[in-house]
Length: 230
Image 1 (cartoon, helix red, strand yellow):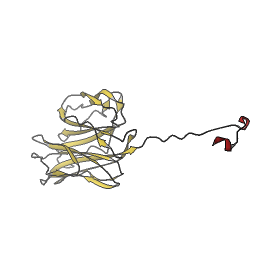
Image 2 (cartoon, one colour):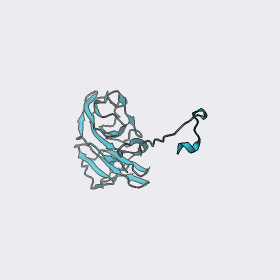
Image 3 (cartoon, rainbow, N blue to C red):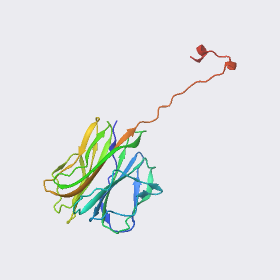
Image 4 (cartoon, rainbow, N blue to C red):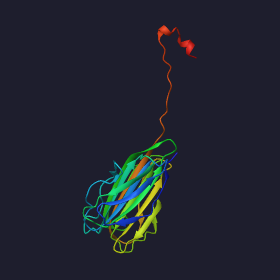
């Protein structure tokens, strides 16, 4: 079995500090991912994202072009959150404009999600990509890109598009891919215009349900032999 995509709330933005909103996790959803595009050359400050009392983990590192970056991107995740609604908090002590896309996914029934691997890249060029990830069968890969392109409109992406948005002075996109077989996979966006960009991708594997084995234990004093156990 493979992961399947779950809820995909609409992309939103804020310059608040902190940025907070209610985020629901439905029964059966085993992965919560938050992908950020932050406007400007300065990285978002304030630390890790949280969902209720649980702290999200950053996959890879914040990515932006080395020379004259206009936007940066981050990918954060939480494994196996309990169903329910909690406040998702994005610290933003610099009061930057942050665009955020939430994505949830489901492992197969009874299973759970675990982190597999992540990659990141940045440059000033066409066709942004975070680079390849060695995936396992059943993985789900999520990826995000932030670009200084003022006419961000990719003609294609390697995975399934979640959103591509031109924000006027910048652009950004998010995508996902469910992997049916093991092997290297490279997320990316086909965009012919050269501009600054940063991109991050992360792959998450399935953990199958635990197989329980029953054992019979007896003592000699019980008066039973191994033949009696059947």
